[in-house]
Amino acid sequence: MKTKYQLASILAGGGALHKREWLAMGMATSFDPNGKPVEISIDPKNHFCPTVISLRTEGYSVQLHLSDEIIAELAYMVNTHIDNIKYPQSVQPAEKEEIA
Image 1 (cartoon, rainbow, N blue to C red):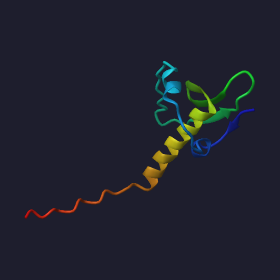
Image 2 (cartoon, one colour):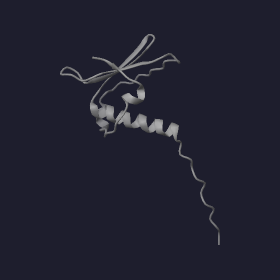
Image 3 (cartoon, one colour):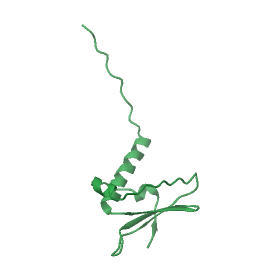
């Protein structure tokens, strides 16, 4: 059964990522909805395939077949990014050193 959520609620949690899992995929693609609405859905894992996150817009679709560990790491990274948008960290100016 597909369940639709908002992006922020899909990507909740934390976890660890093993870099070998990312490198093993061997594919790169881009998804630019050009301001059009994006439908996001998650198909839970079953006996035949891992969890599938789908991003769809007019004429385009991307499906990510991911392990729970990678989804957790993705959630952590997205939540960190969202927190930085909401609460940007200001950089304090360095103190001046006096030369003797």
